[in-house]
Image: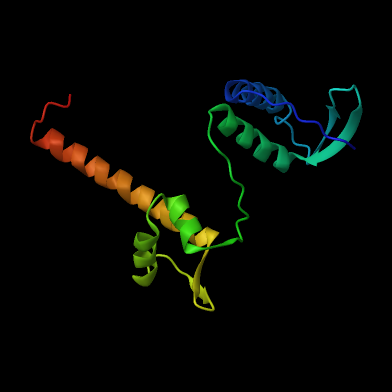
Length: 152
């Protein structure tokens, strides 16, 4: 099987991703565990492919993100991350992440002298922080309303 690539502009790729996500959505309203798709090449060759529906949901999510111009990275839930990879996911500096680890806010272990963070633990921390952030924002809005700051 040969694959050919055609260089496309970022806008053309985003449009193709959006259209593909929409088309793929049609096939995801099923209770079947496996879908059969026909994939064709630019030369007219086609191949029938059996794909788990769960994988198609993931593919649709990837296409949606690409359609919005976002980069996508797939990380297994069981992955162990370096401190730099974890810091990048949280969008914080590596030294700040190390402080979080040392304070026990995110579990980690050492592989030799290097810290490793389980992706699941990192995402659990990120989710907790998001819940706390939303609660704090709600509290600020309530305080602003209580003192009549004009947010009607």
